[in-house]
Image (tube, rainbow, N blue to C red):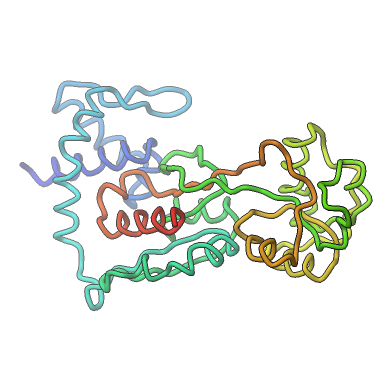
Length: 295
């Protein structure tokens, strides 16, 4: 096989995985015109159309999907063999996600992520959208995201469902019963953001309306800070169950309302398309994440 044939195949596979000629070109560090030329040359060589051009971008044909399955493992193995060795043969996996989830759920099981001495994990905390942008740009390897990405070049799989609970210090629920909505409006609210993102979702799911009648006492953009304030008696808030399980067990916090069906939020493991199949270290870390949340 000529060198240019191999280059054309690599460009084709990158475009296939990214779902976009422009994104494939960016990942390869070449111009979009060059990437298009490589794909077109391969189409002429094969005598088959690999991508249908549409106003929304390119769509892989069945011939392209079949070709990708045939060549992917071979090209990936070749790239791995030619890659420069890492320091001490250690692979670093960059893991991004919300500080609360990674800190409270994943960090206690860090030994599962790092049981292989050849794999090191570096965590990065932040909001879902910026982390997904960084993942797509190559700065991260995995993102645990509360958003299922719709952008091309990223693949997502469910990791775990968060259950949200409405909680406060015991003094706000003197009776041994859950409060109704009218009673809840008299309790000051601590919010994660000005738009009440978590509270709004809870109210719409449970009560079928926006939480417009609530009095927001403070906005704290850290769920652990909200938890600490609630334990101190500052008011009420909606938090993930994993974050307040200990406080509920000890009685430092109580559940104010018990809906028939608790609002859930799915967290996803997001990687760049094709990377999970290609990188064994990445698969190990993702498998460890699933093991940690399943405990």
